Length: 117
Length: 113
Image (cartoon, rainbow over all chains, first blue to last red; front, top):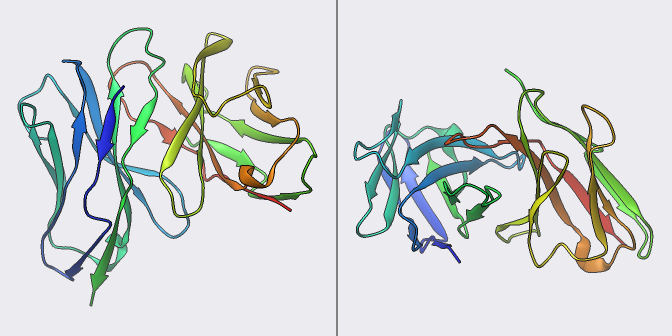
């Protein structure tokens, strides 16, 4: 079974600074997808960024980028120019690309990000 | 932008009662899911549904739980006899095939008293 680990329960960053959230995962599969979700106090789950494992290029979405290291099974999220609205719980998630897998998402424990003005 | 709609947003029920949580997935999505999040804990997979049947379920999804797509738009989660430990946020989600992330609903906060 796949597991996802986020070793940082809490992180903080100054507004306008850069922060990196860590995520590692364990899988025996070679084809899969990785995601970062943001959960603000409203508890809505919002997709931030996704990465296909077969792509070597790291995904980027505006101020959000990832560092995907497939051999190390590492998938960190970098938030540049942090804004107060970035404060939230961030979850890393794994999804198998195998047909018939049901496509469940396996989540990490989450990292609570605080942005200080 | 299309969204997944969940009702109610908050439900309080007595232990032993049946509850039905409702969801309207995005219309052209093919996979539907239920997840739950106990307060302060990680999000846990309950069940996935594809082509009008359960495609996968977790160990949490026991005989007390059932899902149904009664018509072309709604997707429901029923808990037959609620327990205190069922208190959680329940998220419905839907997705297309392929590498796309899910779209989650806003969740239903279930409180069992």
